[in-house]
Image (cartoon, rainbow, N blue to C red):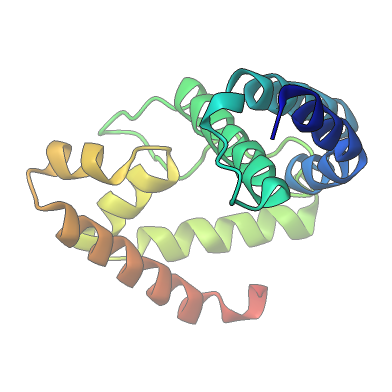
Length: 167
């Protein structure tokens, strides 16, 4: 695919990309920013595109990855883990509905469910939710990465059972 075809395909997808960005961010301004970041990244990475790959899927994967990376950066910037502090009371009240009485009650139940996990599951799960990657948690806890993945998986399962009414 030549440069002009590549650019036409990308421009033709802008509405679909914006809708996907809006679904990810739930905010029009953030969706516009994500769309712009994605468009620039795709244009910069044009040489990495392989012709026999689904173009739309490739571009949307780029957008999803940018969104996830930005989310992890924000979480890390806003989260300081103090071993003596309650790591479950993160700043999640903005635009989440959690500032309502019902939301506050739900948040306290979720926090309680996390606190009730045994340390073997709670610590890696809390670090993961705080934005740490599996390998970082494995290093921090001096455990194999597979053990960390398993513990996070089991923590999720346990929380799903405990919080089944919130699905």
